[in-house]
Amino acid sequence: MAAKKPAAKPATTAVAQRAQVQLPAEVQEQMAADIAAFQQRMSAPTGNRIAVTQDKKFRNAAGDKFDTMSGVVVDFVAKKAFYEGAYDKDNIVPPNCFALGFVPHDALEPSENSPETQHHDACKTCPKNQFKSADNGKGKACKDSYILALLPPDAEEGAPLVTLELSATAIKPFEKYVRDLARDFGKAPYCFVTEFYFDDASDFPSVRCGNPQVADGNLIALAYMQREEAQKLLSVEPQTGDFEEKVIAKRGAKSKSKGKPNGRVAR
Image (tube, rainbow, N blue to C red; front, side, top):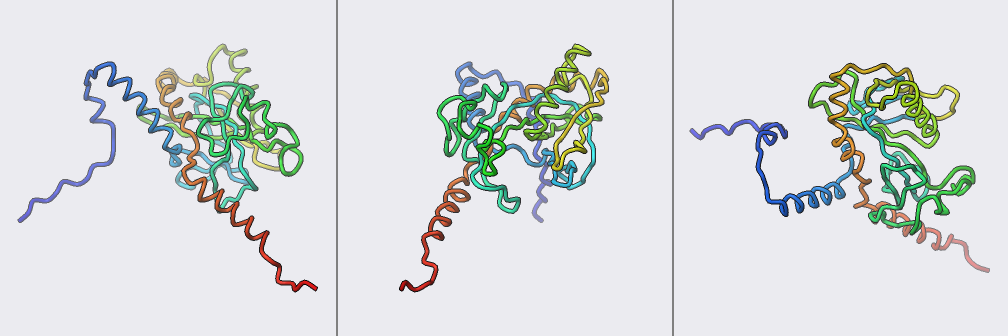
């Protein structure tokens, strides 16, 4: 009788953590470059993303919804993204142009990986970044946001980070909150458990944060140690590999549709 194969073990880095191999400097440099290249090819892990729904709820990967949530802000990144056409929840498309960075929004520059760069200079001077450039003539065609890397309040060592994206209307309140923590307590956001909720006065889901509770020493230490991991997670750019299929092809189909005869006979 053939021996049974051992059951497949779930993917983990636990074993790799014990292997301490000293590689030559040039190999380490190449490995660092490879890691950066690999990161560029991948989209952010969707399983760890907290979604914001139109009915003013937070939704986790399991599909559970909450009116409020709490977490430790380990780090955050500024993002700009321009999408062609209106948002369609049934057909999520990559951005035409985007920028990502640990700098103020006004200091961002378009990523060289943008499928269709809209401006070859600082984002703040881009026509798509000006107010009234949106299709409705009110806001900006290129949308600002912050992406936050969070740890749950009950996190233990090895707990995965989750991300939460704040829309343009939540940017100034979030920045004020971070400044207030520094002014009133002299501490970084990762020293607190922050409550996230929705602005009742807004007609659409706009996230607010407040009610800071000083985290215990173990949670602060864990958050501090996760900062590098948070920055790696937040640095993963949007996946644009299917841009041609989803955007350019659709654009061509629309163009052909407009050029088709309407069936009327000329007289």
